[in-house]
Length: 524
Figure 1 (cartoon, helix red, strand yellow):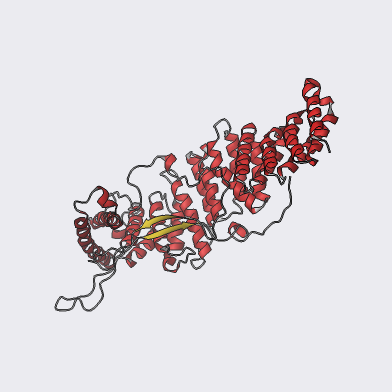
Figure 2 (tube, helix red, strand yellow):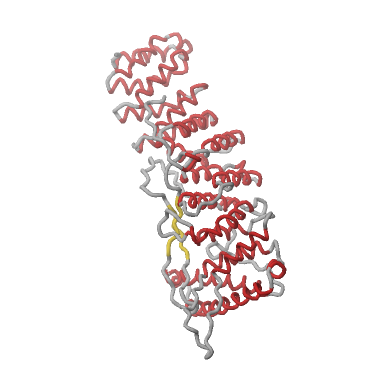
């Protein structure tokens, strides 16, 4: 094993040789042997090996392996130095291998090392994006779970920081091609991250690009399969996929396939839905997604059939008035509960699809059915008017900070819901029924959102190593309104929090089941 003095002497031989440095193979071999020495020798070797690497192609494997030994050294300062110098080995055919190595090194729990690995990967990305992607995707497809997880997060947070000259159209095409391979076997959380990666690519900002993404989501959602409402994973997968699809829909990218599936498979089973997410009103979540998608539904093959299913489901939440006794008092029946949040979603969806078949209520329903519907609408509207007056009275004169209290926030949302229902009911009372009014769903922002702002940026770009995720799925929290029980109730229930999470379990079997654990040694 060479000493510090011998290392410096051989370094001097190589440094002084200038253009003839490649003739001093023995001197470079001494430096490679420095990795077998003590701490000081290793630190010098970590710096000297990459400096002259390009001059000795016949020793390339030995040099890279020597540097990798230093990347795994017990001394953290030696590891950091060795990792920092790795990009110098990323030349020509060696670059994919270096990218593969750096990707594996993402599993470190040392924050400084993690930063160095991230910086090194970004550095070689700018040298050769395709080669670097080859190394990253190799580990995503075949590596340890922790490496896979961190490689995916690297792509989801760092790709958007790269300049256009690095992320060329060819590079983006490679990302799409490789991502499709990964999407054959992913967890729910991984699926969300890949949709974020892909939807951020410039080449997929076009109508045809968005359509490609919708088709990817539809494939993951298994829309060709019969829906199983009693399987929480099946329900969760559909909702997770639909959430990813919703921001992609537009007047040119239609939601028809999803809306059809919801009408045919999900609505008839609405009361049977199960979910692994505690406290989530799964039925309301489904109806909200249907409402959001209904605005962008194109031509539907079985429009009348599906509109009838939607209409029948709406009737379930539009009660008939209670029967009155001869003296005009309630005949003992309880006041029906008016579920405003559900009705807003169903009425909005019916209103949107009804535009495509405007004579549905007059020509497709028999007279008795239409009369029944109008009675229900009238009864609901009567209770609605009373409740709107109560809400307006409660909010009258309140501005600024007063409207920010929890109670008043709930009332503001309740007023949006009831006003929306009121507008839609008025449309349907027209003779013939009208479908011209436009409302903004109560949970949606009123202001217009730019295309680039549609998707929320959830991940940070922190250089620290990702903390180990907790046992259960991560979820956003979004407040939803639960209406009061009685028709004339002025009491407001507490806010619940809608929790949106990834699918349970790991990858495997059609992409959402268990994935076998791997125990791999060093793959360099």
